Length: 121
Image 1 (cartoon, helix red, strand yellow):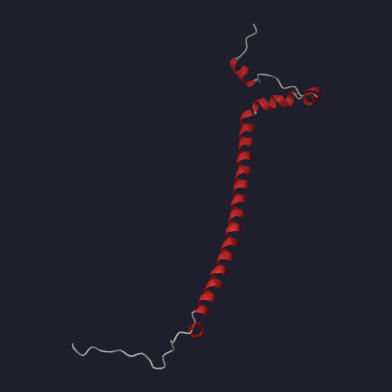
Image 2 (cartoon, one colour; image 1 turned 135 degrees about the vertical axis):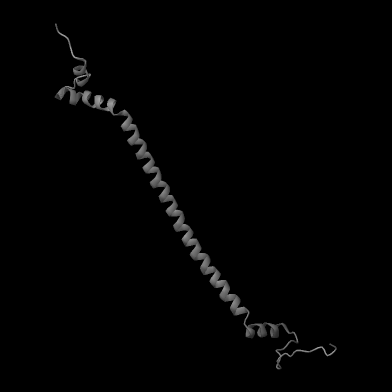
């Protein structure tokens, strides 16, 4: 009687992998490996796509950060220029020159201001 043990059937592979030059060159070996590892290949491809997308997004953000830094520097210089022009125009000597050029009878006071107190209280 030729009875087979069920535990021995589980240990044997379902299809025997025969490696020969014909199976390697013909692509049969590669097809068998691809069929077994389809889930892993899909997962690896998904991770590669996510990696490329993440890198592209971070590069775009770095470009935007550099552009904003340059714009901020330009705005700071413009603000400094405007501030210095305002300081120059608001000096007392410049204001006196402007008033005298307009021909108004205003002059700079020679006596200091003083406080007038109310004596009724």
